[in-house]
Length: 402
Length: 217
Image (cartoon, rainbow over all chains, first blue to last red; front, side):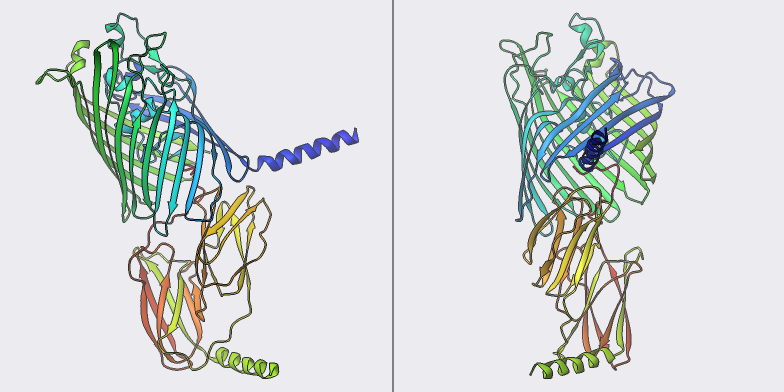
C-alpha cells in the first residue's frame, strides 16, 4: 500500500513536470447586434453580413480552446477547436499541427510543420481564435480565407534574421481544399467573422440550391479531397519591427475542375495572388492588402464556368493604449469572364467598417462596430431581389480571453 | 614588481573615486514618458591623462519571469560573466547568434545556465527559441563611464575628471539608420555637476508581454 502511494506520488510529480510545457488558452464571445433586414448568407440568404433578418438581438459570438504542448525545445503541437451556433451548432478544428523548429546559431533558421493550418494570408487576424484585434468583422479577403481556405499538409519555412529586419520564405503542399472558391462563385464576397474549421459545413445560398433542383438548406464541407491532386502556396515576407512588413503570396489548389464528389460538390480550381503590407507611423498602424484570382469548374467536357475575383482594403488603427479606434475601407468584385459585354455577371461593391476597441484589462475586449456595405450583384435578380443593396450592421461585442 | 603594480592601482583607484564631478542624464520619449533601459556613455574627447583601472569581473544574472527576460538591457565589462536563470514554470531555450558570442542553453524551470564569459565588446541580442517574443540585450563595453537609465528615465555618470566629453545614448528601440543621439558636455572641475536631457524617438517595444490575445506560436 505504501509502495503504491509512493508510486502514485511519483507519477503525479512526473505528470506535473510534464504539464509545465502544456498550455491552454480560451475565448468566449457575445454580441448585441442590430442586424440588416436582409437574410444573412449564414441562413441561406444573399445578405453579406454574418447576422440578418433585422431586429436588435443578443447573439452567441463563439467560443474556442487553444492547447499547446512543447514536447521538446524544438517540437511544438498546437490544436485549436471552436464552437459556433450561427447557422447550426457545430464544433470544429480551426488548426491542428506539429511544428519542428530547431535552434539556429546563425542568421538562418528553418522550421517545418505538418497538419491542418491557416495559409499565411491574413495581416489582420493574428489574435486568438483567428480573430482580428482591429475589428469584429475582418475584411472581405480574410472573411473568405476563414470560410474556405485551410491547408492540410506540410509547410517549410526559412528565415533570414538581420539586425533590423527579417526575410521569410514559406511554402506548403496541401490537400483537402478542393471546394475552395465555390462560395465566391455562388454567393460572392461576404464580410463575416464566422471562421469555419474542419468538421463544419458551409451554407450555400438557398436560391442557388433551388436553381439546381434541390431543397434548401444546402451545405458542403469546404475541406475535402475531390480528385487526386495536391495544391501549393508560396509566401515571401519582409518584417522590420517598428517599421512594417510586406507579404507576397501565390496560392493554387490545383484542383481538377472536372472532378466532383459523390454528393455533387465540384473541385474548384482556385488560384490567386495576394500582396499585403503593414506600416507604423507614430501611434497609427496601417494595413493594406489586395487579392486577385480566379476559380473554375468544368461540369461538362468543354464547358468551363469561371469566376474572377478581386478585393482590396486599407485599414488604419489608432493605438491609444487601452483604446483603439479603427477604420477600414474596401472594395470587392467578382466577374464571369464569359458573360456578354455590358451585362457582365458578377458583383462589385464597397464597404466601410468603423470600430472602437477597448481593453480595460488583459482578459477583456469590448468592441463597438458599424459596418456598411453597398454593392451590386447581378445574380440577386434570379432570386427576385434588386441587384443593388445597401446594408448596415451594428454590433457591440464582448470577448473574454483566458 | 607585483607590489608596485598593486600600489599604483590603489593610488589610481583612489584618484578616480575621489572625483565628485558627475553628469546626470534624463531620457524621455516624444510623449514625455521616461525611457528606461537606455545605455548612456561618456567618452572623453581627448585621451585621459590616467587610464581607468579595470574593475574585477562581475557575474550578472539575467532572469526569465512571465516569459520575459529581466533586465531588458544589461551592461557588461569585457570579461564579465552572465548567468541565465529560468524562474518560469515552462522551459526556455536561450540563444544568441551575435558576433560577440554565440551560445544556446535549454533551461528547465528553476534551472540556471553555466557562467558565460563575455570577453568581446559589442551587443548581443538574446532570444528564446521556444518563445519568439522574448528578447534581451547584452551590451559589452570597455567605456569607463557607462550606465543604464532607471524606470524614471535617469542615469548618473560619476567620478569624472575635468575635460570635454561626448554623451552617447543607445536603446534597442532607436530607429535603425538614424544618427546616434549624442551631446557635448564640459566638466570644468572635480566637483562640477552637469545635467543633460535627451528626447528619443523610439520604435514600439518588440516584446509582447504575456498578451492573452496574441499567442505568438
